[in-house]
Each structure stands twice: as C-alpha cells, then as structure tokens.
Length: 498
Ligand code: NAD
Image (cartoon, rainbow, N blue to C red; front, side, top):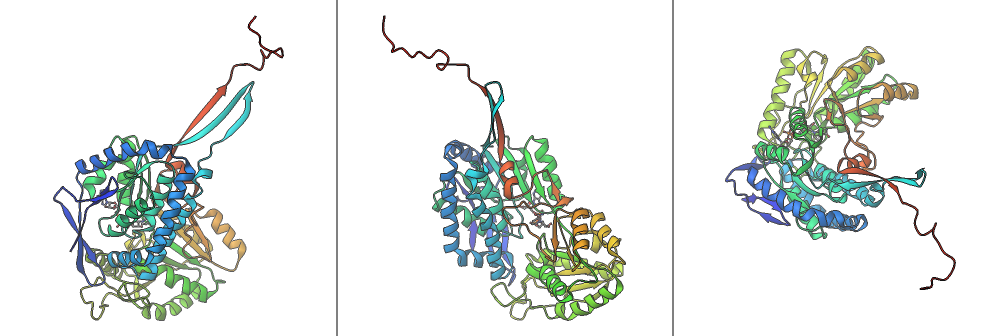
C-alpha cells in the first residue's frame, strides 16, 4: 500500500506525527493508500524552509518565473494520462472528466504566463510640480492554499499558479481524501525548474489547518471547501491578521423559461446535474421550470434520461459518472434522498438501490430526480453534493428570479430562454456571482475571475484572473520628487582646474 507523506523543501518527506488517514479507491471501495496528517511542528518546519527560499524567488524577474510555469505546462501535458488515472482512482470521477479537471487548472497556469504584465504597476508622470507617483506589486512572502476533494488538480493549480508567479513561496494543504495528484504537481513544478522550497504540499486535517491559520509567517490563505469550514477559516484567519479568501458551498439553480429550447435544456440539466456524480460546486442541483406546462414537459423528458444514465467505474471511459468519494459521503447523499421523501417531495427517479456488478463495494448510486420540491424543504435549502436533481416549479419569471435571489448560496445560476430581454433582466438582477445564459455551468475562463456571492464566498477578491494577482501581492505606492541637479547648474564652458 502507498504511504503519502509531504513535499517540503523540494523533496518528498515522510510524516512524523504518527497520525494517518485512509485514502480510498471509490470505484471498488478499497483502501488505496494512507496519508500522513501533519502536526503543527511539521507545518512550522515547512514554513521556515519556504521563508528562507522566498526572497531569491521574489527577486527573480517575472519573465523568468513565467518560464518555469511554461515548462510545467509541458510536463503536465506529457504526464497527463498518468495524472488523470491517479486522479480518477482517488476521486472516483471518470478519466475523461479527470482530464477536464487537469485542463481547467492548466488554463489558469497559462494565464499566469502573463505575470510580467499582470504585475505591472501604475505611473503618473507629473502628479505635482516635479513629482511622479508610481505603484508596484510585491509578493507577500509565504502564502497558503487549502483545497477540497472535488477538484484535486484544478483548485490546487488555481492557487499555486498565481501565488508562485507573483513571487511568493506557497504551501498547499490539499484534501486528505485525494492527495496523490497535488503531490505529483508539486514534484513536476520542481522538475520544471522551480527552486526547492517554493511549492510545498503539507498533508493533514484540522490540526494542520489551524496551525496554518495561526502561523505568523503565513500572510495569506486561499480556501475552497464547504461553507461551514469556509466561515471558520475566514474568521480565524482574519483574526490572526491574514489576508483570507474563502469559497464555499452552492445550490445552483437553472431557470427554464417556457420559450427555452427544451432539448438543449434537458441535455444541459443531465450534464450539469449528474456529471462528476454531482460533486461539483458549479453543478446544477435545482431546476426551476416556469409555468406548469414547462414543468410537466421538462419532467416528462428528464425521467427517461435520468433512468438511462450510465454509472460505471472511474476507468470506464464510456460511463456518464462514477462513484462518490467515500462511503460516508454516499450514505449522506442517500440520507438526503430519504429526507426528501419524508418531506413530501415526489421522487420520480430513485437511484438509491444501484449496485455496480463486479464492484459491489464501490461507493455508487444512480441518479435521483425529485419533482415538486418546495423552498421550505431541507433538500432545497442544503447542499447535497451528489447525483440528485430537484425540480422546483415556479408560476412565473419573477418567482423563479426570487428563488435564486432568496437562497442563501449564490455561486452559479443559469437561465435557459430564447428571449434576450428576459436573459438580460435576469443577468442584471440575479444575486449570484456567476451567471449562464443558455450555458448551464458558467465557470468563467481563466482570464476572468471566479467567485460566488452570499454564503458561497467570503472575502472581497475572486479566484484566478486579475484578482488572484491582487490577492497574492501587496501594493506599494511611491511618490517621488528629485531635487534639481546638474541640469540647473550646467556649465557650457569646458571644466578647468583653475
Ligand atoms: P471540506 O470543507 O470538507 O474540506 C475542504 C478543506 O478543508 C480540506 O482541505 C479539509 O481537509 C479541510 N477541513 C475539513 N474540515 C475541517 C475542519 N473542521 N477544520 C479545518 N479544516 C477542515 O470540503 P470538501 O468536502 O473537501 O469539498 C466539497 C465542498 O467544497 C462543497 O461544499 C463544494 O461546494 C465546495 N466547493 C466550492 C467551490 C467554490 O469555488 N465555491 C469549489 C469546489 C468545491
């Protein structure tokens, strides 16, 4: 069995705390590896190492830093099959979906190749008599990222890229459920030419997270995970005087207007609701058809499609989605389905009983579809994070808009319509950070920024795009006046010694 330690100071090191967690292979339920859970003392050693390495990296010009990332992109491409298989085996998602996970992370690294441009300051010539003002962006020093299980390549890369390109030393605390890929990515960074100590991976649980939050030398923490933990990390990190950004859970609605292209809407709901077994923060978990006729038509078309979903092991390229991440999470998702039935929602497709032949111990369930879900129900209010789609019927457009606006989460939302005016009104008025118009998963591309509103995001700067460079740097503004020098006292007579 594999034992994962940490990646500190440019090499893999064993854990010394004596504490470990199991890493499962969800497709057959086996324990694939164990991962060391770092102590506060191990974190401290990593921080000391990073702190010593950072000044030289921060002083390396941004173009040279970007060149390291250029080589890293090439190395990830060469190792793509190996990384995707490792990711699929530890997470449970299918291999093609794992490749998407890597690709969306690499796109952020590609944007970081523009670091020399992103880090340029501003300049005002002649802000006063003989006075110029200019600003510069400088690295913070040692910074950290704490990431969730559901995108073990993409989200670590979203943090790593901008932090490192900005000249910081970076410490990643990935999810303890799938640490294999983050460790490989750090190794590939070193192979690409990154100096030792600039990209570190410290595995662990709450103990090491608390140590990160309290460490005086860690200047910024970027977190992605569930809302309860996001709130905790935001409060504790801010109280310790750090810069903190936290992205939390979601309940993404997709409004289907009566004039929507129904084929497109159904395809979108199937992909966005059930892809990656619903374990995406941008998954659609609530469909909001407008009007009874639209709702009846939508549900009628969805039922056979949900029943026909192909669930399979992560290595089956033809599967629509794979198992959930752990048995514990599978049980939690199933218990939400039980709860929905108790609450009075109509379970029109029940995937709870699904088992995968030949993989009976895997963490599988089939797709579930609820109709007639209402806003008072817990299955509507809470994030389920599984292959469960709820249909909430709205009488009119205003009611559909109000549903998205009144929900405590505000990560993503979509509207399907052929009416440009309705789409425009929706995009303008909806109280949600990322909006799709006839696009079900509106994850902005790497050169825009990513972030949810309300209880889906804490802090004022988004992930990737220009915000990430702001988050991982501090601004210095210089006001300068040079006293009059040689030009006033210039002499046009040849100097003599007389
Ligand atoms: P999680 O909150 O359980 O874990 C996230 C990180 O926090 C992990 O590194 C974990 O080790 C750490 N952690 C867990 N419990 C902790 C505790 N008590 N104290 C300190 N640290 C702790 O989240 P998860 O289950 O790994 O990921 C799924 C969640 O992440 C979902 O809610 C999903 O919506 C959310 N998510 C959000 C986004 C976004 O951008 N908004 C993106 C991806 C995932």
